[in-house]
Image (cartoon, rainbow, N blue to C red):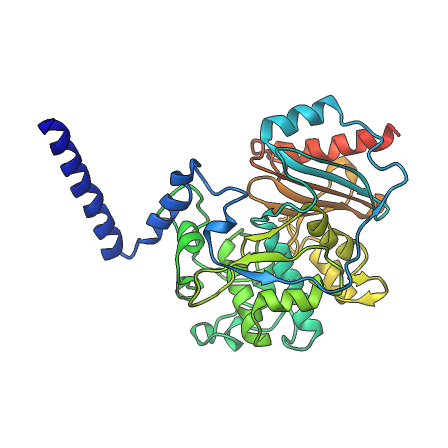
Length: 381
C-alpha cells in the first residue's frame, strides 16, 4: 500500500511538472491536444473532433436548393473493390453526382446526409474561393496584391495573395503532422492563432514554385477578414452558403472565444452533399443557377497548374490527370475528397476516417481507387 501511494505521489509530481513546463515554455496547447485526441481514444485529429473546439456558425439561407436525384438513383451496386476499400479505411460517405443529380450515395457507421464531419484541408479550396469572391467584390484588387498591403509585418515583401493561394509564399512554415512541437500542431490547438501566423517570416523568393504550407491558407483567411471587415464564416455564408442553397448550417472552427479567428487552413464541419456544391460551382465556371458568383477567369486559373514543374496544384485546388482526364480536387488529410471531372459532368465525394498509402503520382492510393470504381459503376449501368 505504501508503494502504491508513493507511486501515485511521484506520478502526480511528474504530471504537474510537465504541465508547468508546458506553460513556462509556451507549449500549453499540447495539453489541449492531449485532451482532445488521446483522452478521447484517438491518436490523431479525427473527423468528429469539432465539438471539442469553439466554432462560428455558417448559416444557410431560407431557400435551400436540394440536389436532384438521378433517375437511376442508387440502382448501381458498389464494386467489391470499392466495398473492401471503404471498409478498410472507414469511409462514412461516398457519393457520385452525375449531370448535377445524385446518382449514387452510401453512408456507414450511422452517418447520413445531415452528418457533419471535419473537412480538414478541403477548407483551403473554400478559402481560396472566398479570395476570388473578395476580388470580385472589390475588397482585394487582384491575385497580385501584395501581402504587405494588409499586414505591416510584410511591408516590402514580394509575397502576394495569389502566392498564398497557390502555395508559393516563401514563408518559413514547416508542414509536419506528427510532432506535437510543430507549428502545424500549434496552429491546430493553440488559442492565439493570429499571433502564431504573423510570426512567420518570408525566407524564400515567393511566386516561383509550389510548396504546400498550411500557414499560407491561414494567412490568406486573415487577409480576407482584414480586407472585408467581416468574420470569414459570415462572408462564406453570404457569398456561397445562402446564394447556392446549402441545405444545412455548418461550423468553422476558431482558435478560441476571445479571438474567434477561423482556422482557414482546415476545419469546416459540414456534410457530403453540401461540400459537393463547390465542385459544381467550379465545374460551371463560377456560375450558380444563372448567377455569376465567381469570375470565370479566376475559376479557370484556379483549376490549372500555376507552375510548369508542379502539375499537382493550382490556386487552392489539387489537380490530377488520372484516366487521362482533367480532374480538380478538394482534399483533406484523412482522405476527404470532392473530386470533379468536368468533361464527364461527374463529382465524387468521399469522407472517412483514414486514407491509403502515399503514391508518387501525387495522391494517396485510395484516391485512384475511388475514381476508378466510380467509373466502373457508371459504365456498368
